[in-house]
Image 1 (cartoon, rainbow, N blue to C red):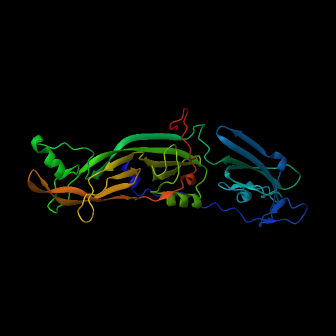
Image 2: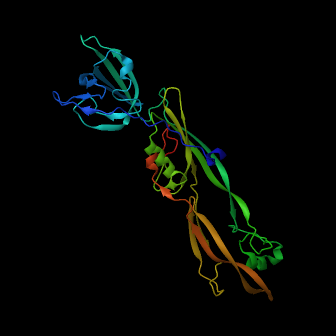
Image 3: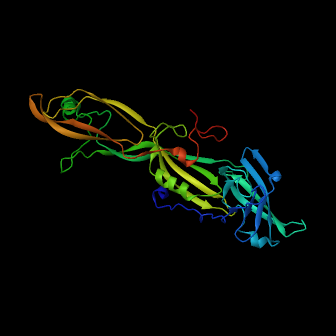
Length: 340
């Protein structure tokens, strides 16, 4: 998945700008006067809300007085991409940023006056396409990591194993010309997974949220994985012909936790130090500083390889993945994909 590390460019549409409205002072102020001289009034009895497993769908009908030309009202009333605002053409208040205008329809009214009827259709953000819910894919793989300390080492020749154990311990040599341990590249367990989701609109605010969470790890349990075990790689957004955005979110999971006791530390004055228990998990990075200590083994003076210090580095900042809008609980895909 190398493409996730490249500049993928977050995509979003142009800001949706609705016409400026001002309240009419006539009657009970349930109408909105459009600057062009048109009058917009909602037929509140026509509101219809449907809800099923794919989300909510709302229909609102408005009368626009002052013209019988549907083209002239293209900028009047709620526009595609606008969130639900009850105050438009009504004396009610309240908004719902998950209900987004997906379509509009205009027809000429036969009311004995010059007017048209505007029908506005709202769909819930993250509404699936053709009843298909969020899609999840995963790939369990390995990632290379350089280490200079093994977990267990067998030394040869066996007749000198004791001396070699004292000299090298579990360090991984040989030494380079500069005196550094050469170490080895190890494959660590990791899992890539992606979530495909759909949105009716991408706001600049949401894109800024994505940018703020990019290359961060989760600050709380996310999709069934512990804190700091999930890294957000990024997202690719494409807009389909029906106007919906398809977003593919990419994550890396490193659920490995290692707790190990190291008993070959030495202090600053070269004396043996107490054993240290080191606990490392997720994307934390453990590194060692090694030192040599003179010792006499079998009547011979040798330099032994010891641990002078150990360090656990936090290399990724934490972020609140709830802001992605994908939920934070285990991912469900009939049956649950990740379940704890």
